[in-house]
Each structure stands twice: as structure tokens, then as C-alpha cells.
Amino acid sequence: MNDPIRILNLFTIMNRGGAETMVMNYYRAIDKSKIQFDFMVHRQERGAYDDEIEAMGGRIFRMCPIYPQNLFKYQQLLKMFFDNHPEYRILHSHMSELGYFAFKEAIRHGVLVRICHAHNIPVFKNETIKEKIKRIPREILAHLIRNIATDYFACSEGAGEWLFGKKKRIIIINNAIDTTKFTYNDKIAEQIKDEFNWKNKYIIGHVGRFSPQKNHTFLIDIFYAIQKEISNSILVLVGEGDLKPQIEKKVSDLKIEKKVFFLGAMSDVYRFYQVFDAFIFPSLYEGFGNVLLEAQACGIQSFTSKDVVPQYANITPLLHYIPLSYDADHWKSIILTHKDYQRKDMSKDVQDNGFDIHQNAEWLTNFYLNKLL
Image 1: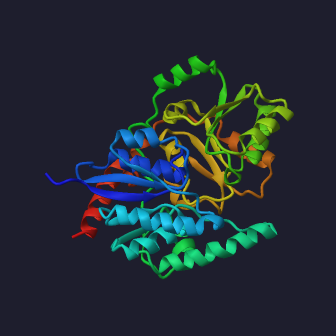
Image 2 (image 1 turned 180 degrees about the vertical axis):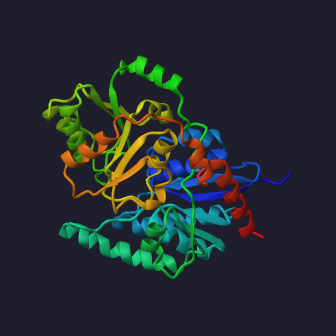
Image 3 (image 1 turned 180 degrees about the horizontal axis):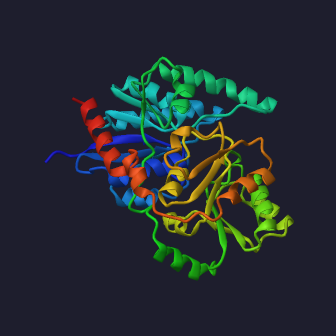
């Protein structure tokens, strides 16, 4: 029996972000007798998914961060890596334009398949001078990587057009989920409510890392408006990130700490979707917004940012787009309009729209295999 083809995936660190979770969904579902995933990461500390990766047979190679002061060192490490690992014939980068350096070295070592995968749409509004200066090399590298990638993947058309332009043949890869996990189960909901003493609560949920992109500050404003009108409402926040202390302080300053639950990063987050009555996701930008797919599958009324979150995620009547220009009270009013919705499972709708992980993992397996024929 032939050994599986090993795909080298490029990431910063394998924590529970959107792109990382999407790839892990594929990794769990893919036929590992044919395809095996390895990971080149750019942090020395272990990521949240590292244990699971290694348990499934994946290897993790650690590089230095791609900072300007590290570039010469990084290029030397890349040369050394590819010298020592001639087994890789497919490189799949999830690092946007920063995959350029690894692609360039991979070409020198004869790696024929170089997949660049766009997972996000950067927003450059209201930039500081420092941010504008940082954007220049980003755009240069984005232009350069278009000419050395062999294949162009994206989670949505908008994400693909930002990174690759409009002339490249972009393949949309669905941010698929395991619909069997995100199926509404009232028994699990009751278990969670008993465990956390959440019975008779109007439960608002959010899943996402604490970063500027996810707009937690505005999320707290929305919830503050809701809880003034709905006294039994609570907010459940799943995720970690650098801005978490800042959001905890805001919650404390508003004196609503007894109504806001910080659960951290969770491996069984799908269980908590069972208790959410509403899902609020007011991101400043998104390439796709995978958690919106999970929330819809579980039958949750979901609310997200109009114009900056792609319509590609809108596959059920449960997803509502609200302009970010609306204030927190306006968001509250729209959300509470749907408060009395009778919840039902929508996972089959998600599956029928092509977002089931098992179907998509089979497609990806065949794509990799066919590239090497």
C-alpha cells in the first residue's frame, strides 16, 4: 500500500481561528490513507490544535515569525527546511500574501503545486498613518504571490479578488462544517442550561477571537442595550485573544459582569450553540464568517454586519444583515423583533447547500491527487 501524500499547510499558529478551524474540519474528514496534513507554523509556542494534529499523524514544523527584522533568518530557515524535506510536492498556504517567501523557496526546490488560499477581506478604512505604511508591503506581496502560485483558492469571491485580482481563476472552497455536530439537540441544550444555571434566560451568543476585527466593543454596546429591555438576557462569549482584558474591563465598567460569561476557547463549542437564542456577529470585515454557518445549522437567529460580511454565508432565512452605521439601539430593535422565533434544526439546509464537510473533503482529496497525475 502506498503512503499518503503529505500536504504542507502554512499558518501563523494553529489556534482556534476561522481559517484554522476550517482546515481542521477538512483534516478530520479527509481520507488519511490517501492524504496527510503537515503544518509549517510561525510561532514557537504550541497552538490549541497541535495535540489533535499530532494525534492524527500530522507533523508540525516551527519557524520564526515573519517580521522585517527576521526576513534574512527566515529565508535561510526555509532553504534549510526544503533541503531536508524533498517529500513535499504540494504546498498549501493559508497566510495570505505572506506565503510568498515560502513559495519562492519552494520553486527553487521543485515544488510544482503551490496553492494560495484567501480567507479574509482586509478593510483599510480609518487607517492610522502607521497602518497605511504597513499596507504598502502587503499590497506588493499580494501582487507578487499572484505570479508564483499555481492555484488560487478563496472562501468567497471578495476574498479571492482582494488577494489575486480579477484575472486569476479562483476556486471557491466552501468553509464546510460537520453538520452532524451542528444539529439542534434540545437534550444537550437542557444539560448546558442546568450546568451553568441558565434556565429561563434569553441567551445571546458570540464565537470569535478577541481581536479588532470581531468588534467586541460594539457587541457589548448592543448587549447593554438589550439587557436594559430584556432583564433575563445574558451574553455568552466563546474565544480568546489579546483584547479580552479590555472587553472584560468594559463589561465591569458597565456593571453587567453578572450577565456576561467569558468561556474562553473551547473544543466542544458546538454544544453551546444549542442554548443560544440569538447569535450576534458584528465584525468589521470577514472573508466568510464560518460561525454564521454553524449558527444557522443549529437553527439560531443570527445577526451580522451588512456589506462587510459576504452574502455567500446567507443560506437560510435565519441570517440577518444590519449596517454597522446603525447604532446599538437600532441593532437591539432588529434583534428583538425575532425574539419569539420557534427554533428548529436547519442542518439539512446547510448540507443541501453544499457545506457538509464530508462531501467537500472528498472533493479536496481528488483535487490534490489529480494535481500530481
